[in-house]
Structure formats: structure tokens, C-alpha cells
Amino acid sequence: EVNIVWFRRDLRCGDHPAIEEAAKSARRTLALFVLDDRLLKPAGTPRRTFLARCLRALADQLHGHLLIVSGDPTEVVPEVAEKIGAKTVHITADGAPYGRRRDEAVRRRLDEQGVDLVETGTPYVIPPGRVRKPDGTEYRVFTAFYRAWTELDKPGPAPSERDAPKWVEPAKLRIDATKTVDLAELDTELDTEDDGPQLPEAGERAALGRWKEFRAGPLADYASDRDRPALDGTSRLSAYLHWGCVHPRTLLADLHRKRGDGAAAFRRELAWREFLADVLWHRPESARRNLDRRFDDIEYDLGADAWKRFDRWRAGTTGFPFVDAGMRQLAAEAWLHNRARLVVASFLIKDLHLPWWWGARHFMQSLVDGDLASNQHNWQWVAGSGTDAAPYFRVFNPVTQGRRFDPDGQYVRRHVAELRSVSGRAVHEPWKLDSMPAGYPEPMVDHGEERQEALRRFGRITGR
Ligand code: FAD
Image 1 (spheres, rainbow, N blue to C red):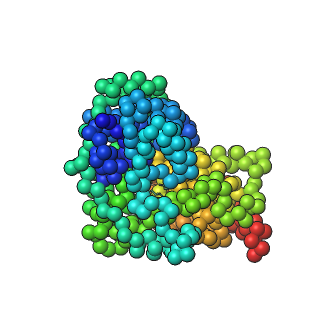
Image 2 (cartoon, rainbow, N blue to C red):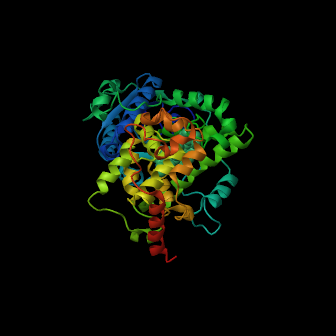
Image 3 (cartoon, helix red, strand yellow):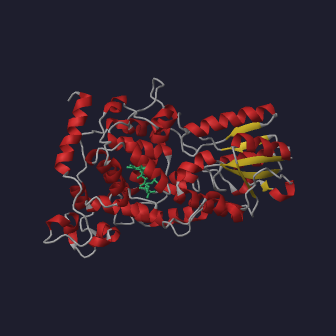
């Protein structure tokens, strides 16, 4: 008897409740991954390349026993189940809009074949949709969510190794599925890139290695260093968390043994990830449109030069060093420090008056950690149209932000080659130097004026 573990955003073997469950119900298990164009097309090369590497790492852990098939999961999964005579397909639940629709469709097809789709666990410590106000409705403000989330009992990590299933070699099952993808063909299939941005090492072992390193070092000062983009002060676990190379439950369990501000601040950031997934679960439409519908009426500058302004933002040639450093870090590393994400997003929306979803789409295509819930809702948070009613009138000043969070200008010099010869914090205002460093542009807007303009537009929709 064979069953199936259909891997999705849970590309690991340890602390994996769906694998545990599979091991209980059959003697042998087929590991399956489906390359689904609907998810891969909007992903961008860094994310696809990282996925290919994670799949390779997972296949290594499974001694090569991973079947990868390309196609529509609603056809592929029932087809594979039928061919090998499986009676159960085990998955980790997916709470995002497309994932939920897909899994319902797969469930219906499997039902017709008398096969069960069994969901065990989610990519979150508390399943999205579970944390509720006493009156049963969802939270819209993080601090209140966080209080409730903190008080809930949380499951500990699963004692995995002991109950590992016996993974079957796909070749032995003669599946002959329509579009089986050989590991060697993964790069062509996913259109990956070897000489693109520098990506983190992929897979579960790399994730746990990075966690160990972070826990032993930067975690202690995380509360203060996490806002300093020049430092290696954050965990850089986001891409691993997105693909489930490590589960946040594992991290949280380790944190229980740690005291201090660093551990507390880190726990809170993990909870932000859970909160935004919860918002998406309750309000799937928020991935595409404003949570606060008043913002549907905000005016954008979509005239003839909109694309030109957008291109300067993308290329990191706005003439604001902190913004440009951020956009160039994104291009070089497919990752961006959180402080810089906030400032570049604010600049696009409030200085260039361009729609948040233009920036969100660019991030989803460029980031190795692109994640629908975290990305769309953080963009909306900056726009003021999302959760927490983040005050729209608090417009980030790119110069003040730079001077405060990159006080000696190290971050800017690292990423903006034209400014490398400018020492100290003067790098944040190159227009004040005797002459502008060669090749670096003048600021593309007057921040003070655009700030006023953003406030005027906000006033028009809120009546303030
Ligand atoms: P750490 O500081 O080490 O934090 C640990 C983990 O907590 C992160 O890996 C992440 O999973 C979670 N986390 C931290 N901050 C946030 C946050 N504000 N919201 C949600 N989760 C958080 N994060 C993504 O994972 N994917 C995205 O696509 C994404 N897009 C963003 C877009 C904008 C405009 C902004 C302002 C933030 C975005 N974030 C996104 C959140 C945050 O910037 C990244 O999670 C963080 O920078 C990743 O680096 P790290 O792993 O070193 O974070």
C-alpha cells in the first residue's frame, strides 16, 4: 500500500506533521511536487531559481525519491494517485486564495476516485483564521492580534525522524505521468538563472544552519540592530520560511529557551507574518485591492511619464541615496532589508504618486522571499490602505531615514558605486557637496513638495 505526500510550501523533512501523518497510514510513501504555472509565472527568476535549488536539496534528503511533475495539480494529483493506487494524499494546508481554490478542486476530483485529501498543519504556528476576537470576528490591528496570538497554546515541534515514512523510488512505480520533470531538467523547466542575484543557499539544512548562526550571534541585539540595514542584524530566514524549509514553530520552540529583548522582538516579527496571513485568509480580495476602500479614490499620477518615473525607481536612480541603495540591494541580492523596503515603498507611493500595486508586483518578481500575504499587506500598510490604519500622513523622509538608520552611510556606499568616495553621513545629501559625484543624478523630486501633495490627496479622500 502506497500513499502520497504532496509537497508545496513545506520543502523539508523535519518537524513536518503531514509527513508524520503519512507515515502512520501506509507502509510506503511517494513524495510528489507539482510545478504549477499559475504560481510560477508571476514569481520572477530569483524565486524560481531558489525553488529549483530547494527541490534539489529536498530530493537529496529523500535519496532522490521525489517525483516532480509539471501541470495543473487538479489533473496531475488525481492522475498520479490513480496510477499508483494511493488511497490518501497528505498535504500541509495552504490558506492563500489560489491555494484554497486549488485544494478544493483537487479534493473534489480525488473524492470521485475514492481518495482522501488529508490536511495536517499549515505554514504558520497558528492556522490562519484561528485567532479571533471574543465576538468571533477577525483582528484588523496587529497589537490586539499579537496579544491574542501570544496567549494561545502553541504546538511544539513534531519529533520527526522516528516516524519517517519509507519513501518509494518513483521509477519503480512506472508512473509515466504526462509531464514528469527530471531533476536535471528543472532549470530549463523553471527558467532559472545562474548568474542572477546572489541567493541564499537553499534547503532545510541551510535554513537550520542560518538559524543556528543567527541564534548564537545577531539575535541578542536584534531589537536594536534590526533597523540598521548596514548590519547583518536580521535572520534572513524569510525565503526559507516562505518555502517551508523551516517551520516557524521550530524557531518559536527554540526561542522559548531564550530571554531578552532580541528574542521578544523576533517573536513579534514572526507574529506579524502570522497576522498578515490571517488577514489574507479572512479577506482574500485584499491581495488585489485596498483593504480600506476609501483609498480606491486616491489620485495617482498616471500621465505619460509615469513609466519613466517608475523605471528610475526600479533602477535605483532617483537621486535619493537611501532609496537608490535599497533598490540596488534588491537587484543584487533579490532581498531587501525591511527598513529599506519601508522607505522605497513610501517613496514610490508618496513621492512619485504611483499605485502601491505597481511596486508590489515589482517586489513579487524581484524578491527571493516574495510572499503574497506579507508583500501585499506590507505595501498596503505603507500606503495607509491596509491594516492598523497606519497614518497616511506619516510620510517617510528618505534623507532623515538614511541619516537615522544608516548613520555613517555605510549601507549607501556599499550599494551605490557612484557615492563610494563620499565619506560619513554626507553621503545622504550629495547635492550639498561642492560638486555632485560623477554619474549620480540630482533628486528627481522635491520631497517637501511631494509630501504636501500626498497629504492633500489624502485629505481629499478622508475629508481632513
Ligand atoms: P527578520 O527581521 O529576521 O524577521 C524574521 C521573520 O519575521 C522574517 O523572515 C519574516 O518571515 C517575518 N517578518 C519580519 N518582518 C515582517 C513584516 N513586516 N511582515 C511580515 N513578516 C515579517 N516579507 C516577506 O517574507 N515576503 C515579502 O514579500 C515581503 N514584502 C514586503 C514588502 C514591503 C513593502 C515591506 C515593508 C515588507 C515586506 N516584507 C516581506 C516583510 C519584511 O521586510 C521581511 O520579512 C524581512 O525583511 C525579511 O528579512 P529577515 O528574514 O532577515 O527578517
